[in-house]
Amino acid sequence: MSEEMLSIENLELRSARGPVLRGVSLTAAPGEALAVVGASGSGKTTLALSVLGHLRPGITLSGGTVRVGGHHTLPVPHPDLRGHTVAYLGQDAGATLTPYRRLSSTLRTALGSRDDRRAEALLHRVGLPASLVRHRPAELSGGQQQRAALAVALARDPRLLVLDEPTSALDPVAKEEIRAELGRVREAGVGLLWITHDLGSVEGLVDRVVVLDGGRIVENASASRVLTAPTSRAAAALVDAASPSDVRSPRRRDDAAPLLRVEGLTATRGHHHILDNLDLSLSPGRCLAVTGASGSGKTTLARCLAGLHPPAAGTVRLGGRPLPGRAQKRRLTDRAAVQLVPQSPAGTLHPLQTVHDALARPLRVLRGIRDTNEIDAEVERMLTSVHLPAEYARRLPGRLSGGQRQRVALARALAAGPRILLCDEMTSALDSVTQAAVLDLVRDLCEEQSLGVLVITHDPQVVRRVADDVTVLEDGRLHQLESTAADPV
Image 1: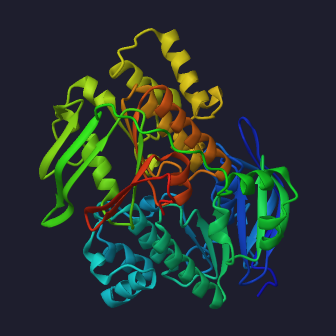
Image 2: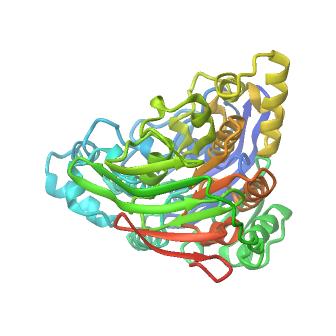
């Protein structure tokens, strides 16, 4: 066996717009754990995919090699690497799971075995109940999907596990469960290549941290050194932005009538109650954070408010007027007024539709803008507001990083001119610097345009930065409501 599990030598990748990775060289010994961090768009995911011999459309190899276990993945992938030698858990965990297949079928395929007991054992290994083998992906929360996708990646006991943001959609308890499982994976001699923007998630679990900036490695040192005394500006910015001391004080309480009022909301899936008789209200210029464990019903709540999951009972009122349970039955102005930024935008952005077209549609359909020049100007303004260059308007979603797609999803929601903004883990794929900028944007919109904002999150930093109030959802019920003037989590 090669002395190096992973060997990347002077890797150069390009797109039509220029270099994507520039002279990247990196090695890892068997069983070693590396974290690759950097701002959104710095090349982290592209580097991860290259380890599996995969290049996104439009990206070409202009120099260098990648070897895993002594075998090439670039320029020519070895046919027997995937699954046994190296496995991959992507940023969009839902894409790993076939929508219409039960988990039992997906896991049996990954295992190469029809033994359901082995499939159930895999789910138990990642902290999921064995009963979920009968479920399809749409019946799982985002965090449950992520853990199920990890089970698929572990099915054939790979020697190197490539992880792209494996804990980004998980609540703190589930995140610790996954960290514990990955710790056991390490103890078994499996190497980790961990792509993340969340420096805290890798603390105590990786040996080295590699910092990417503009497609180059600008820092490669022990995890403790990078986390406590970074030497590159890129690493320092990530560490500073993640600091809990950067918290903005809550706004004063507004006594205005609620924009949105929810009364007795109950939601089901089949015979199972997901939400049970919920009451809440959202006032203009206020931000309400909804927290809770993975699977507690947070995303279902947002989908009910947006008209994507019709409630079994209860009423949702906008400005005192009841809204139909289905978005298709709502008036055009009401559909524009309540906008959802989804947890996984990859599934809601058409792969063959440019960013410009994605943003232009709500401008035309929901705001009635017809002038081409006005639409172009608004698209540019929306991209600028979420800290994306105007030139990204010509890109397809496949040419964007996960964090960039999340910002496009936010821009698309803002393009509708909403009164209510529903944000479902919208910063989970963003690096700490970009996350801070986007959260500040949301807070500013809340203040300046008197939006009502509901933020679904498991991240205490998000709660502290933007929320006025926080409510905890557990087993489909609201258990706590308080001001964030006190420490909410």
